[in-house]
Amino acid sequence: MTELTLLHTADVHRATFDALAARIALGARLSHVVRPDWLARAQDGIGADLADEIAKTIADVPGQVLCSCTTLGPVAGAAGAVRIDAPMMAQAARIGGPVLLVYCLQSTRAASRALLAAAQEAAGQRQEIRMLDLTDLWPLFEADDTDGFARAIAGRVAAALREAPDTGCAVLAQASMAGAAAHVAADVPVLTSPETALRAALGLTGG
Image 1 (cartoon, one colour):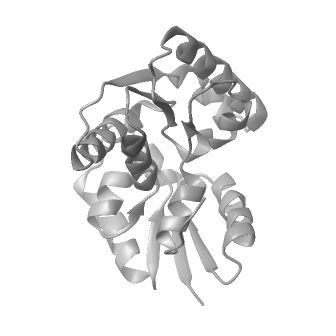
Image 2 (spheres, rainbow, N blue to C red; image 1 turned 120 degrees about the horizontal axis):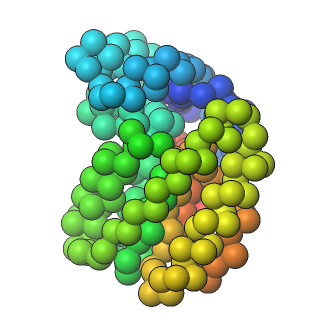
Image 3 (spheres, rainbow, N blue to C red; image 1 turned 180 degrees about the horizontal axis):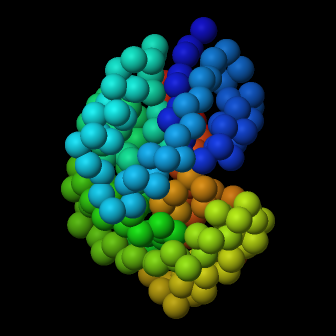
């Protein structure tokens, strides 16, 4: 049985990944570590103490580790975890064309952009990265208004894509944003991270 430990900073992701595993990986055994305090501590930058704590947690758990928090991704990735957004960024680079990179938390901005740029370089792409700041919508997620959060993101993303018809794809940077994709009326791919990352962490292929 494949074992996978997931590091989350919001408890809502536990149910998301359990449901995904039940659909695409019935033989997988998932364990969850939920640490909202890590995200709170990381808002002004990830200090050495927090980085060491994350690295120790990753080293202490059995099997593969998937970090579902984009903000913590660089530190978790350096410690050996799969970054939730890495497979998605590689997919965006393969699609090509200008990319609309959408984020709802300021602390994810730099990490997401850097990861996408690295994926583009690895794929031999040098396409424009267009940032869409939706940080004003984050309070909806914090208030557990997941439907309102998803629909608000979808409306803004659809509007941005209408204004830039040459866009190759849109990337929803955070796992918490994934529900918005189903509500976006667009002719280009709108990429989300949870299923793509889970497949990668479990060594699965296909979508």
